[in-house]
Length: 384
Image (cartoon, rainbow, N blue to C red; front, side):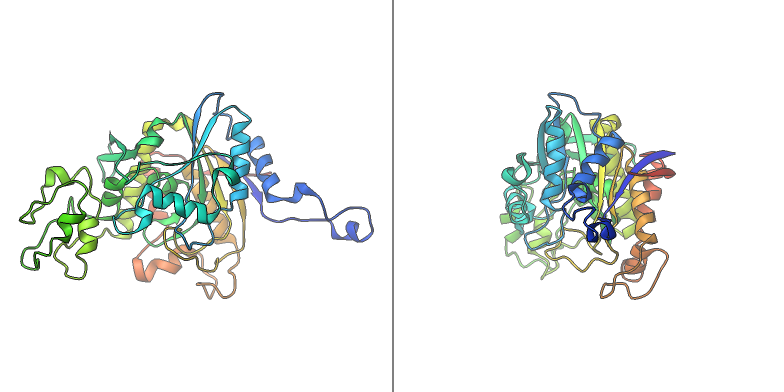
């Protein structure tokens, strides 16, 4: 049984005492930022960090008009606590899959982070793209996964001494739950692995019967894997697999791809997380799950829906599976918010959102992580 520490989001100020003049509204200890600092101290989740360590704080920077990412004030506190240990701290995120959107590039990611309020000035640490300018800076890692046997781990993660995962917990139509496992399984790998997580095809192929020879795929390919007669060279494409050719050809459908089922995507996310943990070392990870603004979908999309449960709080653990299981349990125990995507009480909230349209269940990810021995599904929740 793993230990998961928890601080709730309530600021339970003593109103009767305040009304009688025995207490003040202005009590900083009720701030969730200060409760976060106490959570980190009591849980010992940062005890892995030593002076001089290069520490990657892995988070999601959102996508330009995303509005419910983790607030920068929480990330600043995380960095402050790590700076006190004498660590070299940097905030990091990887590029998205594709070649057409700014979020698919390191610089585009940095611009999105700035819009969301994540800068050196606000967070006290530099922001460094985990996988380089275009998402191809990686370390290739062999694993014995449930489906994946090779994972392309982002280079900055592979080079870090320690990794602190700061996950905005939310729903996800393919991964089920966006928590600690997804934060490292998708967020800490480069484009080729994002391709493998989402798509069954080993690499794209051009359907000559539908191709009109426009040459857009040839122009966008960063690998030079497409010949002048518009054939894809598998040996070159495999180390990139960026999705660019498919993007520019979607209207014509000459480069079709088969997207993975939600269950297989969840399994592959767990496989990728195993590779990331194997690369850095399980003892070198700390996990913080922010169960705040619990929206139905990932911060990858350029919008944020109404949260479907109230703010729960923040969890800390050294076990990614236990912290995600605890997060899911707390979400399922919470009431439904009005005017959200859910309209009636259900036992498994995220599954209820996506079961019909995507055949998705967050338990797929947890079950895969359990099979891969990423942690323990049984946990003891200790409230701070």
